[in-house]
Image 1: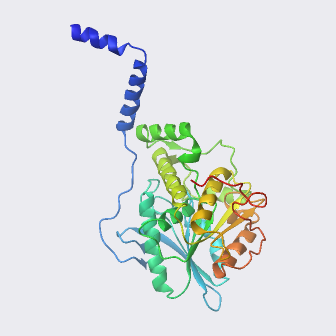
Image 2: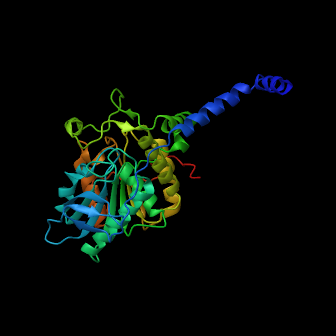
Length: 355
């Protein structure tokens, strides 16, 4: 009895509510774990078969190809789509690049489009391995030809993390179109903390962007088509959103270690990925790649560009810049939109803390 009374007094001391809150949070976190796609169980040599790309674990992903229609192919591009999107994102860009001598390969990443595990996050390590497998395939199909990555938003983040990993894809460089780097470091403690609690308590709850006053593009007809497209995901599981934030964390961290040639594209009217994390990324990339005369890191900023740059109303100029860089990484960009990445004054970003 004395032990019970002593314990009760301890529980009513000031600060006890903190223990109770912590206990509640821990209970919520242990209630449900975020769901993650499982990898395949077989082993395959990556290859293309029946309109699908077969990855090393046997998983088959829908593939779209736009072979070069020029007299001779000059380069190849592996295109990775953004979050909730799928390979149809390149339905106009693919043929435009093919007409310039660039063969394009785009697949539905796991969890998206008609890919397996629709709506379930696959993990960014798996997504990076898929890119490495696709690069092996394209290298076999086009020996000796330059091969580049092209990633829109989430796709750009996948390329960044893959290039910084031990399983680096065999690509010669990459175009990062509005790369998704809005990680927890710049998101703030409250949103990231709330997301952690929700991802472990109600991971399967689906959220919709309906009602949010965010414009991903000024191309309204294109956005309406996406709204009618059954393969474009309209409602997203909370744990999948958490997985995306994990990827953005990893991509921002990877920007300290990237060494390849990169063209970063960004629109000044982007309402999806803010300027602050983008500039933090650029500051880190400037240090890791260098900004000497060889121009390993290049930046194009479009004053009227939104997030979905090459699908915007002015997307043709973005397409021309992409093609120009892929074919000659040292040539001036046709749009004249190139900006210094970090220099004060004339640069897009003020000097950035690139820790």
